[in-house]
Image (cartoon, rainbow, N blue to C red; front, side):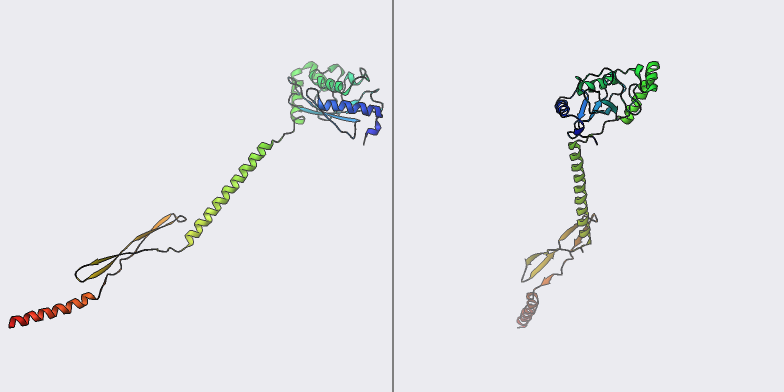
Length: 270
């Protein structure tokens, strides 16, 4: 595994400064992945330029720096599969900036911008992928179709999950569980009510009427309605009228009347 020990101290210092600048102010469509433990391998994600067959794709690439960098150019590779004339099937990048046009004064920012521009304007004359170069020269539509196919399959950006959506899903799940618990509790309560025996809580009302030496007590029946929600039925329980009770005064009145009648008869005889 390569480490910073493979590079001279002055190069490490310069790279640290440049990588910090790239992280704080990245070029358009380029994001550098910084690894403080190893400056000899630089990773970057390149967004496919608009109006090209690589649009909406994200391509991961790397630059390998040798020990005599910056006197010798870095080597560039695409880690994401791509159909491009200047990129070999193994991912090697062929561009003049990384070969004969290399200059030690060129920085990593310049190299990354050149590689992204290669997606906008390929050079089929120096093709590493002969099939892509030939299609680009002879049938651009077919070349673009192949490039878009590769982009859709291999360069699809990874989905990013939003915290708000998760919260909403979790809240909805909790609400459903709460509703289910409440419904279960209601069903259990209804079942327990249905299992109880029906009881009549009749409260008879008493009316007292007084006549000639007579006292009557009448019991008026009342009705109690019991609703059983589990069975969804209504039962009406009626109380049978209680027999009327008569006081003992009525029994005493009859013998007194007989004595009076007997006295009247005896007076008539006199």
